[in-house]
Picture 1 (cartoon, rainbow, N blue to C red):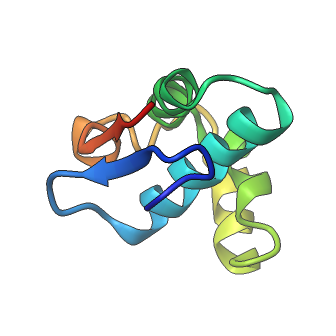
Picture 2 (tube, one colour):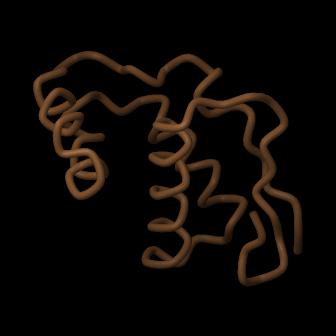
Length: 95
């Protein structure tokens, strides 16, 4: 996926669709609205996905997957994407 500044987010392994959507949504929020450099935005997005519980993730699902958002809102103290499978395959390459 090419970003505006010429860099790329690369995935090196097979990844899950839902966690990828959440990771990249958070990446773009951090990069575009919080003005982090893309490598740092990706790192922070990976940490966020790893450490987030259901209620933290639910707002990112409300518009696209309202049924899942409701389930996530009830998943307190559960970190569904803590395993590196969900976030470790992504790297940022570019200037």
